[in-house]
Each structure stands twice: as structure tokens, then as C-alpha cells.
Image (cartoon, rainbow over all chains, first blue to last red; front, top):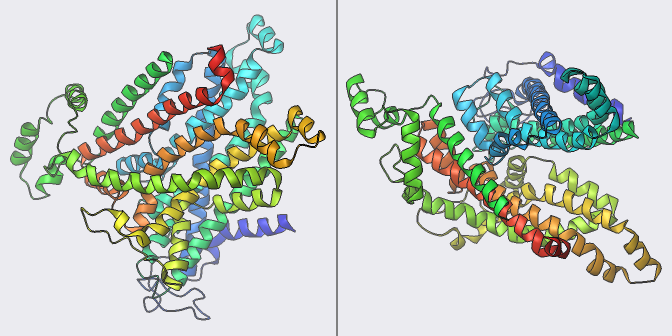
Amino acid sequence: MKRAFAAVAALIVLLGPEFAANSPTKPVGVPYSWPTWVLPFGTDHLGRDVLSRMLHGGRPLVLTSLAAALAGVLLGAVIGLAVALTKRQALMWPLDAIAAVPPILVLLLTLTAMPDRVGLVLAVAVVGAPLAARVTQAAAAQVVGRAHVEIAIARGENWAWLLGREILPLVGGTVLADAGMRFVTSVHLVAAAGFLGLSVSDSDWGLLIVEALPGASLQPWALLVPVLGVALLAVSSNLFADRVARHSRGMLG
Amino acid sequence: MIRRLATGAVLLALLSFLVFVGVELLPGDPVTTRLGPTATPERVEAARHQLGLDRPVLVRYGEWVSGLVQGDLGRSATGKPVSEMLSDRVGNSVLLAGISLVLLVPLSLGLGLLAATRRSVSAGALVLASIPEFVLAVGLVLLFAITLRWFPAVSLIPAGSSPLAYPSALVLPVLSLLALGMSYAIRVIRSTASTALRSPHVEFMRLNGVPSRTVFRTAVVPAVLPVAVQVWLVTGVSLIGGGVLVEKVFGYPGIGELLVVSVQSGDLPVVQALTLILGGAMVLALLFADVAIRLLTPRLRTTS
């Protein structure tokens, strides 16, 4: 039951643009009109269909967050593994310095320099990488001292073998669990970028919220719907991350 | 301890360099901001020379650092001294973060301990806490400002006056910030407390019939505190910088709004100063956290 519900919700978000009745950018009625049968959530401050804008905005939000989370975990895992293997803590310093900068500032700076989707993915990935690196390093540090790794080193195996065959299978579960948490924070940041007016799609849910805020007393639906949308997405991705974490722990036994 | 201080200093130096160079790479330019789009190339060139912007990055970085050491944050692209622009706003943001932290400490400790014993509390708290803070802030505005009209939706605080004079304008921003810091704190306190609850000496106390209240006071809370203090310190600092979005929702006159405007208008000196303040505060908090751990854990005091 839960799974079926999650699958339907994921389908609606990912295929949303196909279901949308109207264009997300063209006015279809009077600004701030209340819900009707044709426009179930009414129109926004420019007379655009709120439901269609929601349906168009979901896919870019989820896919961008996913790409950023994966990129961040990949970057962090590589650095974390390198630190654990070489025991050179200095490799971690640039990441520590980045971690001291507030995430929103990283987002602002990167998106001002490169205001496109690549910039957004890069910014969110850079924010996530330090934590991913710490988690991976902590997990890998317990593995590198084991006998089978030392034997492999003595055999003269190369880096790729050491990482891919000896270490990754043992820390993979932890990295995967961490990836779930990175996805949650990615959703937060990508929505926040839209809210700050730095969105890369024209119907970002964060953008919908900031646009509907001034007229909220005239047409609360235009604000309530994207607020609920982001809240539900955040909560469900959090529950999903917890599930992934529990499963990956089970995998290792 | 000296090692810790040295690491902190290295981190700060690295941070200041990253900030300076990173902000330099932005497309915005303080000269075009100041003169506007109609300025002739000759005037832009003259202004760049006057401000010293035509010299290499490293030279200017050196000057910036020597200014910093003397307490001079430089001049904004608008011509005003940066320290003057920042003083009020930093105070306002610190005030908001401070009030939230004062509420956060008892609330997160109580809820964290409760969550360690009751699953439903822990699940409920975590679901609520996973909602982004600005979304929660907007939700609070919808409910308490627009529907119920209990608190104002916008913090109308005149420049120069203290937000403390407008307590009703502070309620919703503080609640939103609280939610931002709560999730991490509850998570950490819950997991530390449940580890402590499973330890052999707690089981032994239980079997001897020691009341639950005493078990918590003498065994669980002392185990939780060193970790909790760390989390509170780091959260307190991240609330200053993390409040950017919350400040934007309520139009609160803190550093958040200034930061967004300065980045978008290319006012580099202000961005550099703000980033260094926020990053420096974080490095300091981590340092304090290390000291606090030593004070709260007798074992560490005796061995070192």
C-alpha cells in the first residue's frame, strides 16, 4: 500500500509536465482568481494556472536534486577514500574550509557566476561533499587496516583494485545511507535556490512560493499548494533516506 | 590544545583566501555597480585605478588581510565603510539566532531524551524537522499571520531601532529558526541517549530498582551533554548564517537580506566581510566545542 502510494506520487512528479493542461508561463485567466473546476488551484499574480505550474516544476526539482546528491557523494567518497588510504589529513582541509561557509552563500556565489543548471548542481554537490567525505573516511578508516587489504597491498595491486574490490564493498552500505541524507539536503537547497530567485526553471516550486507570498491574502491557494508540495517532497525523501539507511545496514549484517 | 588552535588558524587563513579569490571570480564588478551602466570606458578605467582594482589579486589580498588585522573591513562599492553597514545587521541576526538558541537548548534536550524512549515522538519530530525552514516559515505566515492574524507577516523594524522593541514581530522568525536547528539536535541527542540507555551500568541501576528519574539524571544526561553542547554551539552559529531564507520571508533587517543584495549587485567587499564573519564564527564555535568537551568529560581531563 505504502509502496503503491509512493510509486504513484513519484510518477505524478516525474511525468507531471505531460499531465499539465496549460502552459506554465502563459496567463490563462484573471490574476489571483480563486479555484474553479477548470483551474483547481486558481491563478497566480500574472493569471497563470497554479496546477500546471506545479506539475511542470516537480520534475526539474527532483532530477536536479538527484544529480547534485550523486555528484556530491561521488566527489566526497573519492576524497574520503583517498584520505583513509593515504592517511593524509591535509587532503580534507579544503573541504573543511568549504564546510565553514554557509550553504546558502555557496549557492549564491556559484549561481551568480554560472546561472544555469550545471551551476546549481555544482553548488549543491560542493555543499554536500564535505559531509560525504567525512562519513566515507570514517567508514573506510576501519577497513584499511584489515588483513585482506594489507595482503592486497603486499601483492602490489593498484589503486583501482584496492578501492573497487577490497574497500568499496565494505563501505558501500554506509556511502549509500549517506547518499540518502545528501538527497534530502539537495531538495532543500534546490528549492531554496528557486526561493531566492536563482531558479533555473521557470516554474520551480521555490519560485512559486516566493512569487505567491506578497499576494497570499488575496489568493492563499497559490501559496499553500507549492508549500505543501515542497513539504511533502522533503518529508517523503527523508523517510526514503531512513529506509535506505536501514536496508544498507542490513546488507552489511 | 595548541594543535587545535593552530588548525583553527590554518582553516581561517584558507577560508579567507578562498573567500577573496572566489568572490573575485564573480562576474559582478564594484566599479560598474557604483557608476551604473552609462559610464564611459575611460571613467570605468579611472575608477578602477583609483580603487586599486587594476593590481594583481594577490597584492589586493595582502592589503585586505592587513586591513582585517587592524580591524578595517574596507569600503563597500557604494562608498560607505563596510563595518558601518554591517554593525546593525550583524547585531539583529545574532539577536534572532540567540533567542532561538536559548529556546533550542532545553527543547531539544527534552525532546531528544523523550524521543530516545518513545518511538512516536521521535518519528513525529523528525517528520516535522525535515521540512525546509523557509517552507515552514511560509506555512507559519499562512496560518498565524494571514488566517489567524495573531502576528505580523513582515517584520517592520525601522533602521537603527532594536528588534526587541517589537516582540510580536520576532515570534514567527524565531519559531522558524528553531525548526531549522531542531532536527539535527534532536537526532544526535536521541541516538546518544539511546546508546547510554542500553549500556550495562544503566541496566544494572534499573535492576537495582533505581527510579527512572535518577537514572536519567545521573547516567543518561551526563553522557548526552558533551555531545549536545557541541551540537548546540555549531547550530547556534549556523542559525546566524542559515537564517538568510527566514530573514527573507519576513523581511527581517539582518545580514541575510544584505548578503543576497550584495552578491547580486557585485558588492564584493561586503560579501567578503560577511563570509569571513560567518566562517570565522563557525571555526570559533568548533574550537569552543572542543574546550567544552574537555570540561564536561572528566576522563579527557585526566589523561591529557
